[in-house]
Length: 143
Image 1 (cartoon, one colour):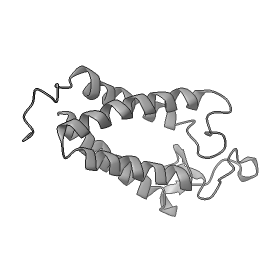
Image 2 (image 1 turned 120 degrees about the vertical axis):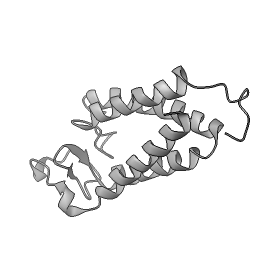
Image 3 (image 1 turned 90 degrees about the vertical axis):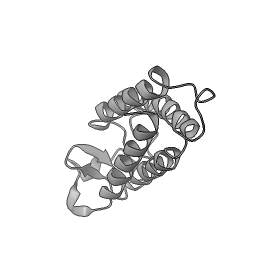
Image 4 (image 1 turned 180 degrees about the vertical axis):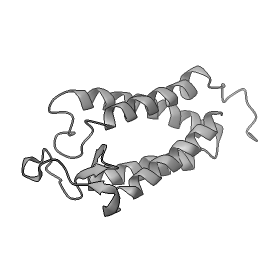
């Protein structure tokens, strides 16, 4: 798999995850609704019973997915996507384990099951964006 394929597959994955967050049958209620750590608790629950989510989180996943899907069309944009994704999701992973920041200041949940998912996807994006990445200036634009 190359940089463009990772951008495409991760884009599709995050768009599916974002859309799935809007399907009530796939989102379990949080353990206690009275203790919501979020200011935006519309749609707050656990996707597949594992991943804390809310309305804003779902929209962010769809946006990241659209970014990856669109970036997969050209090598340079796919490379930028992988590098940006790796950096952004590494920061989000760290935020997810810091008390108070695990809710992005009350906007969306990035704690719990989201931490290992964010870490894994950041690591894979980093692999394609920094380790195996071809120099886009040396590759023909037809690829």
